[in-house]
Picture 1: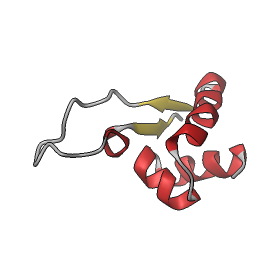
Picture 2: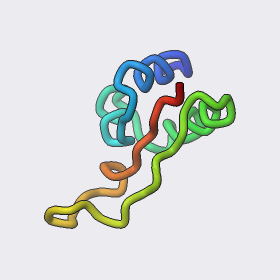
Picture 3: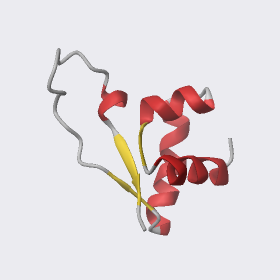
Length: 72
């Protein structure tokens, strides 16, 4: 996976979770986060505030609640 692929994915979907990115790119969060940090530094992506828990069963993995958004 290249930085441009990740950038295009986030741009296309506007708001995505780390869990969604892990599935799409068949990788783990440890490999995604440095690339996400680079996109944040470029000012084109921002990390959404992390929710403590979802509104349902409260057994979500943290990757399911960690979202990144495209900035216009």
